[in-house]
Image 1 (cartoon, rainbow, N blue to C red):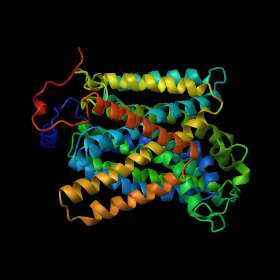
Image 2 (tube, helix red, strand yellow; image 1 turned 60 degrees about the vertical axis):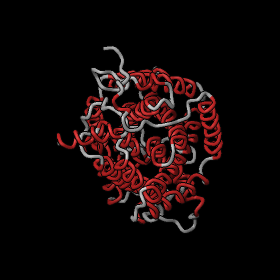
Image 3 (cartoon, one colour; image 1 turned 180 degrees about the vertical axis):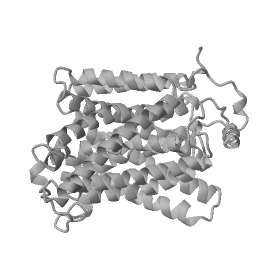
Image 4 (tube, rainbow, N blue to C red; image 1 turned 180 degrees about the horizontal axis):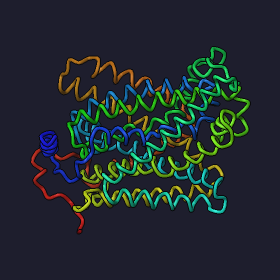
Length: 470
């Protein structure tokens, strides 16, 4: 293991960087991080929305989503081996194609990384108000944010330990729900058709299927965050790729099983029309009684408010760190605490932006719905650039003969993502175009100021890293 660490550190120097972040994460740490980011019980919170969007074929929507994301995970695995650094798709597109393309890729995925934590806090805060009505949503946002920022500040290892504990709790509740639900199906409590969640010929169409996938994709966002930890991985770079694919497949299977069970206690879309947000909890109530409904709702609040938002802040701060290190965002974002070996300025800026967006959206009656409609479009656009970087770097520049991995897989991945984007929410499409236009303006400004995007070359690692005082 020590030899692997030394090798990766040397690899990092080859790309013009010094090792500043602490390499302390094992394969299980990376796998658990990805699972907790995606939230194994994510469908608890958005089951009703996906059910309606898919015409009841909610399990099929998650199945298609998993397959679509597997192509993306495969491209991530290829690029993380080539460039084992923080920054994820920003790094891969920037070094695989060109630095300006990397800037746009980072800019697009940053949109979702900014919005996701705020949405998670709002959903969790809204759920908590049903248990503690006297505490407003904005107060819960402050509580969740303060806890997560503190954990992130004290180092990646504490974050990994915290997420493991929370993951065990989520899986325990999920197991309870599945056991009670399957028992309910076996004893005749179920009212749903066992085949319709998988396929319904009367309602199926490409538009319905991929429109539902665009909503379900919210649950899968996060597996890509594993690649942000490439410089904190203590094993070989291929370990990151295995964790990406492993977390995605495990989460996808869990999503499909739990949504099928929940669908067995829903007679049809009309039943949940008036209470979409609580559709899963109502199904749990039919399956096991009020106690199961309360348990699943409370677990959702804790999972979204603490666990998922915790790792979302980690991913966002690492992206800001990578772009700041390359001076494509303000340089102060690259400052690393020599004591804790984490990008503290990026962590605090992430918290500040999340707080601002969260407080504003908590003041709106449609805050949760508005944020939900906006998320995904940025990440999906960045994923397309990821696939393109595989083709350009491996097939064209490196003259690879691995046609399946370096041409067929990324091309299919792009085609699937285009279908999902075309069928996405109209507000999300408008936001995505506006954010892209703003990114192009920022990029043009960088060129005008003589700061065109570039990445370090060999030999620049000898410069002193930017650090903050102890």
